[in-house]
Structure formats: structure tokens, C-alpha cells
Image (cartoon, rainbow, N blue to C red; front, side):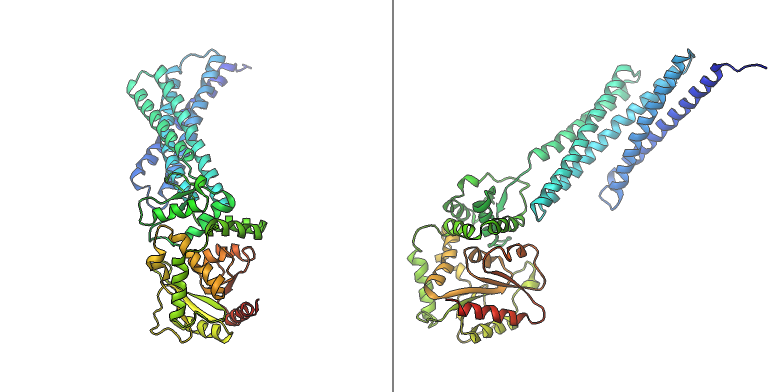
Amino acid sequence: MTTEGPEPLCLAAAVAEALAAQHLERDAAGCLDAALALATTLHTPGQRERHRRLLERAIEQADGALAAAAQERAALRDHELAGGSERIAATRRGAHSTLARAHAARAEDALHGAGQLSLSAQRAPTREACDDGWRRAEAIVTGAEASARAAAISATELEAGSPRPRVARAARAAAHRAEAAAGAARRIIEERNHAYTFHTDNGFSFGEGWYVAAAGALAGAAIQIEPGKAGTPQAEAFLRDAGLSDHLQAYRSRPRAVKQTTEIVARAFKAEPSSAQRRLRAAFLGDVPIPASVTGWVDRRLAEARAGRSPRKKVLLWIREGSHHPHRNTTLAELLELTELVQRTGLVPVLTGDAFRGGQVPEGAVDMTLFWKDPTFRQLDMRRAQLQFFEHLRRAHGLVGQLGVTTAGMDGPALLGLPTMYLTDAPNVRMGEWVGAVPGYKEVVREGGYLERVRRGLSAWAAAS
């Protein structure tokens, strides 16, 4: 009986490793070619995910080819078997060429992903969601940097031992692309902007400025002012008068979403409601008397409406009419209903906000709509002057509260302590943060019996001393 020696078995194992390495290397190259062929269609649904899966498989298979080639070489060396060295070298060159180009494509894709995710993070409605988005973006950037290093290693391997300089040059070019993409992705993280933007153009709600300023005054939030707009100087004057100069930074891209500021303000009020309100009143109103230009304007308008000497308490009825979310605009039917309800509780309705479109103002109501367009309230101190308008009504003319559909114009007076009821079709997640936190701030959802809840609220205001 003849005993079979070890050489045939070792040779068979080496042949199997060689076949595996070649198969993996060819599969890796095919996956990479398929991934790169999708370059012009990545914007279409599903194609970017397919591109990423193909790149991952190309990298996985190329790494597998290198591992199999290393095992083949070890088997031949250990058993002193001749041949196969050129085949192994060719497999390694192909795998490294694929790896350099695949990692470059993955780094470039990571740059795109980090950019998109960072923009989404900045728009997140809460600080927690924003921070989570940035953590995920940084993880993507870390992956891009790992790919850049891997591409550089493969390019160096090819430069050291490839008889085909063209392949080595292509790999080095791919490594440079990977490095550039990873560097650009890292800059996105480094350039993260923690500031909130105080918007000054007509495309944004005027009232959102109150949120931003309050977040700065109560929580030290960084603020940047939208530059080059008609309202830019007035915004800067207001913020500096509010003592927020140290919180201002130069304007740049990628700011945090202003939506986050309502939650920041709510946290401060929940912690110390009286202290938060005192701090905002000191910041927004200052410690100087209300100018005669403001008090005189208010007094004259009330006198013209024959309400200047009325001892009766007053309620602001807000009118909203805007192109943004027009379904939230005030309807004439509801406004008239609320006006009558205010009067039945013994209070004087004072219409404010946007223009009244119902013809003649209801008898007994005071029209102070569009007050903010008067030159008195359009000067450099316009932001503070508009808050002083509400404060003078409260101090001198018995203003006890405000009522209306959800509009940011109400929120400046609310933060300063004016009792508020805002109407909404469904619970407002963002503004609901203030309910139970900002004193006197209430949400009234338009559902069965909501007018009765409004009536009870008005009656409480009327009865308050």
C-alpha cells in the first residue's frame, strides 16, 4: 500500500486558495465597475443606496482576495512549492487597484452624506435631535477618513511593486481624491455653527426674534443676525440694548434651527419662572421710562375710539393673515364670535396684528391693527418700541390678556407676563413647550366646547384684581 505524501494535498490547497483569490478579485472589480456606472444616476430614488452596497461589496471582496492570496503564498512557502508568485502578485495588484478606487468613491459618497445629514441636523426642532444628527454625521466623516487611509495604503503598495505605472498612478490619483473628500467632510464638522439666526427679512416671522433673544438672555445661546436686510440695524440695536452683545457672532452658514429656541426658553421658565420673567423684562424693556412717542400714540388711538378714559379692562384680539401656513389665518366668523364673547364678559376687545378685513370694526372694539407699520414703531428702536406698546396698554389702560390664533407676534408680550390664550386646530408641539412653563400661557385646541374654555379664561381675567 502506497502512502500519499503531503505535497499533493498542500498543492491542492494552494490551488484552491489561488482560485478563491482570483474569483474574489474579479468579483470586486465587477462590483466597483457597477458602482461607478451609477455615478450619473445617484440622484434618482434608490440608486445611491445601491451604489453604496456595491462599493461595500467591492471593498469586502478585494480585502478577501488579498487575504486568500496571502494564504496561498504562505502555503507555497511553507512547503517549498515552486510557481504561483506572478499569479499572486497579479491578484494583489488587481485587489489594491480596486481598493484604492473603491475607497475613493466611498469617501466621496461620505462627503455627500455628511453634508446632507449636517443640514438635516441643523434644521432639527430640538437640541437633542440636532446633536444626534451631528454625531451621526461625524461617524460618517470618520468612515471617510478611514477610507482615505486605506486608499493611500493601496496606492503605496502599487507604487512599490507594480510593473504597470499607469495602474499605480490611477491608484495614487484615487487616494488623493479620497484624501480631499475626507478633508472636506471633516471641515463640515469643524465648521458646525451653534448660533441661532435672528432673521431680519420679511420671509420670516417677526415674532421669532423674541425666541432667539430670549434664548440668549436666559441660556446664553449664541446669536447671529441676518445681514444686509432692512431690519438688520434694528435687530442689532435691540440685541445690544438687551445686553446680548457678548452673545453675537459673525453671520455664517449652517446655523441651528430657530425652532429649538422655544424649548430652550421653556427650560429656563420651568427652572425659575419668576426669575426668567424678570430677566426678560429687564432685557427687553430696559430700566428707562416708556418714550412719550409710544405712550402718546397709544393714548391718542384709544381717545379716538372713545376708550381712552374707560376704566374697563381690555383684551388684545390678534388677527393673523399671512401667506405662510394660510390655513392658520384668522377667519372673520371666528373673530366676530370672539369679539362678542370678550364683550359679554365685560372686557373691551382691542384688535391688533394684521388688518381687519371685515368692513366696519365691530361696535365697542378698538382698532389697533397694523400699529407696527406706524413710523413711531419703525425707528432704530422698533423692536423695543413694539414691546413698549403692549406694556403701556397694560400699565395705563387695563390690558389683562391676549387671545388669538397661533402667531409669533403674541409671544413677545407673553414672555413679559401678559396672560395669553392661543387657538390652534391641534396641539402645537413646539409652542406647547411653554404651556405650564411660561406663567399664564395657555393653549386652546379647537374642539368641542372650546369657546366655553375661552369664556372661562376671559372671565378669570375680568375677575383678576
